[in-house]
Length: 519
Picture (spheres, rainbow, N blue to C red):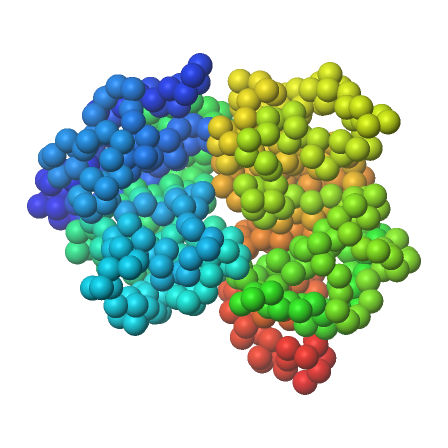
């Protein structure tokens, strides 16, 4: 960053404070952002990062303090003013209309969809150009409601890029990208940064923070507790600053597998819109083993997750559970047979926003654990929720609060707790640490390892190769509904798995969409 660039302050926050009832989300936060600079904003889940960015973007109004953009005070609670000033935000929790196409979502708020001046063909062409430049594959004509979580995140990134933002807020932007795609995105961002783009980068991936940022600002319990120049710090110090103590990842040794608890043989499922189904897939989930499933979002993970959850049935092939073929396959059957799930989308399928924590804690077990002859035992349910809150460090005022008021990470902790407390035989962990801070990530990983060690079969679905390689006893890669061979722990480098995730490994090994050995 040049001296001239650094001299221009494009954003100034002074004394920003925000409260939600008894909870103080931000307290007296102040910092500047300069032209051509990348600030990484770090903190535990619930530390106030997203709240602070929503104040900057005009979605929340601060109780105290001020925000200036390019020397001009930002009117409080005015997203249009932020957009007009050149602020673009990639939200962690998506702000998309499911019933509209990708291109319509991208121009929404910039142009009226019925305006005569709007030229859809030109809009789509520009979106395709941005998709190619930033390695964010998405179909402009696809309905957002039919997209996977990963594809929706790409739309959020494209929406900000389409609007020629001068200040870009990136909230967990690489959660669903392969290492190659993330590095390609960073390479393109570096070009934009060199020409003056200013970025606030929120991520729990500390290696990305060290790679892309110039400065790091750390929030803890809503307060700014530390600021570091990136070239003077390291991951260990940043992790300790975030949680207030030294952080160490759990040691997860390899584990010999037991007998298969669930087996799929040549299983296929129909495509779901633009999302591929499974293509003659063979898979064993064994007792006492973590099976990792790596892949770019939208390549069949949703179909596999829905199949194991009982939401869909195989169109072809055979599924065996505990050695027998299940009949009348349904979510109720899956739960009754010891399958528990940590769903990919905690908002859409993991929780009910206007239910409180107690109601969400018992969503999948209320009929068997908390009711008798149709009568709910609410004191027992509330005690269960209080136990989850304490055991899994769900930071909230209490079990009666609506779950939509929690941070994403704290929602995830509650879901994790309700799954693990049932001691299931098979755990479907779909993106279990997406959006979690490093302390929470380590805790989740240790809990999954403990479940494995007591004999559970764990299927870990993740786009984070570091997570896959750290936890998995064996790893498969899924691409276009095809499944790779099983790779034992320590036998593959990240670049090799990334090549399989991009589809190249399938091509070079002659694995076709017709089945693993059809070539």
